[in-house]
Length: 110
Image (cartoon, rainbow, N blue to C red; front, side, top):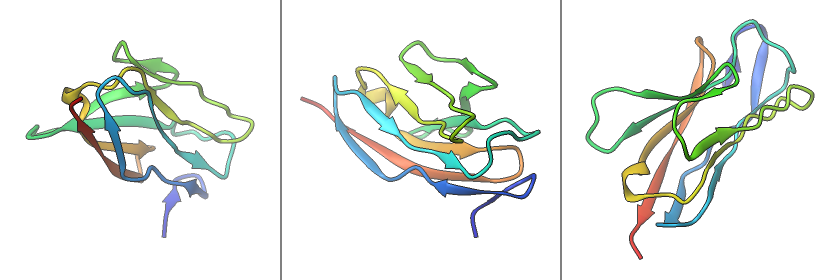
């Protein structure tokens, strides 16, 4: 069962995604509640990395080509990666501090 804290649940989880270098990528994430005490976060773990790094937390992007336009009215928190690069390949996780859901991003060269 996909459940966020605060009695919310995930309506749309990120999906396994393939992209070619230079393309824009959107990874989807949506919860059924529009406000939560635990903000939605995106993290990534690049191939061969030991830990996850923050990509987005509390309306703040941590990487230049990564952004989220949070829509609290709909609960949508899609991660958009502009001009994907080979180094962006890896595992991406969406969720709050109590529950996360993840998917793999595979990036192919031109």
